[in-house]
Length: 185
Image (tube, rainbow, N blue to C red):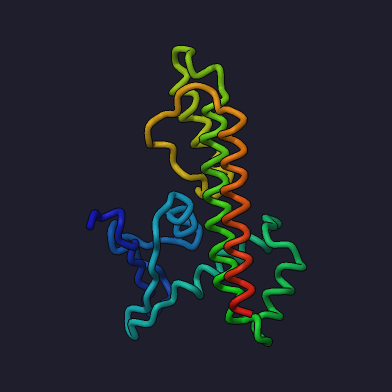
């Protein structure tokens, strides 16, 4: 397994300082958020007990961003999350959230691919450099959740039937997800 495929191991010392085991230096919560935005998986463990503290620290990162006015989670969503800890929906919520974010990533990837297909500028010299900058910008703006476009480049423009097929595929996936959720409840 390549080094970047393994989770980045962060050790928490008794002093509560966080130590990056790859670079042998101390890191902050903001550094950890940056690793995650760059697409890196992170695991945070207590040095003494060996307890996995990843979830605790990820929640802390989210709470700090929300308190600084970087509101991503609307109040009604936060309220629903709190409710989910006290009723039968608790077993459904994690799966639903996971599938929702997966669908969001897939949709963003398809959107980027469709933008490529429809762009008449792709024949202009230097276009690839500009496209790479745009992709990096979008990735930064979406917290790194836009899928990569490193595969073969699409040829020509998307046809209306291609777009209809993609829309039907998204509808099918949504219906499948709804069916799974109905079975869980």
